[in-house]
Every structure is written in structure tokens, then in C-alpha cells.
Length: 183
Image (cartoon, rainbow, N blue to C red; front, side, top):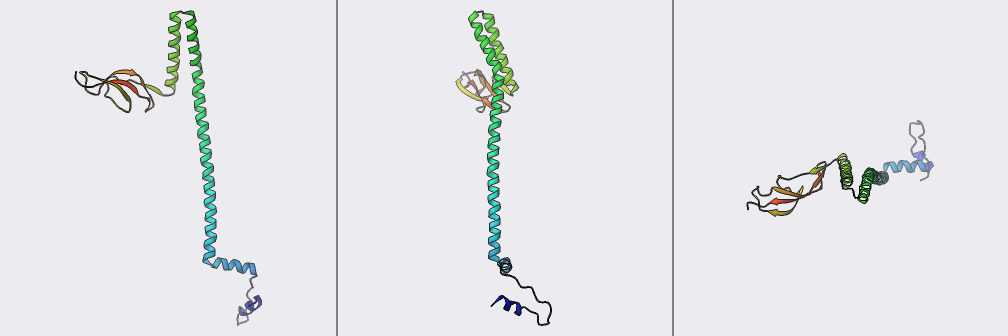
């Protein structure tokens, strides 16, 4: 059936207005809009395109966060190392005091380095863990020895190496001697 025949069949019998005929392209668009399969495929393609865009945006986000995290880590290390340089200078001065063999100058130099380093650690939030007399806690202590004692079993008797905390987290557990019961 030709386009002209379609138009004639569509004429109203009462002689009213003639309906406008659709050219080939417009008819295809109307047909697509009415066909549920075509409509579903178009929606699928749109959703797939959105999904791909979101995946690309998320991938870019992950890369940006990883880059920012690395930059932050480098800046933090840089700041800590620059704060350690004066302590290094003090240590060099203490070593130079060994050449003069003045015992008092050596002791003063080492004490200066110790104070400077401890001040830096405290400023970064480090605290000393002193568990002497406390009950053994495997999360905070490392038992090196157990020895008989009159103290309650599991009590820390001696600290062999200090432990340190950074806030609530253990940087290094204290190495301790623990009471093993009555002698």
C-alpha cells in the first residue's frame, strides 16, 4: 500500500480536515515509540551508558583519593623528618663532645638529645607505657620471663624495655617480667 493510499483510507467520511501524513522517518519514530521491545532496548542503552559513566567517575574518584592519600603520607613523613633534623644536629654535637673527652659535656649532650627527641615524640602524641605493678595484658605487654613471686600471678614485676602508645594504639608493647605465682 502506498503512502497516498494510506492517506485516502484515513480521510474522514464526514469531509472534515484531512489528517496530516507522516513521512517515512516520522512513521519509523512513531513505530519505535509504540514498540515495547524498541523502547526497552533504548532504555537499556541509556542505563548502560549511565552505568559506564558512573563506573568511569568512580574509577577517577578512587585514583584521586589514592593520589591524595599518598601526598598526605609524604607530607606527614616530610614534617616528621624535618622535626627530627634538630635532634640529629644535637646528636652530632654530643658525638663531638666525645673528642674533647669532657665527661660532663658528653652527659649534657646526650641528655639534650634525649630531651629533644622526647619533646618531639610527645608533640606527636606518643606516651610512655609503664606497666610495672599492673596485670599482664597481651595487647600491651610482651612477656619475656616468668618468675616466682609473692605478687599475684600475672603481675608485671619488671619492665625490661619500655612500651609506647600513640593515642590508644600500641606503637611498641612493653617487654616485661611477669609473676608466675608464689615461690
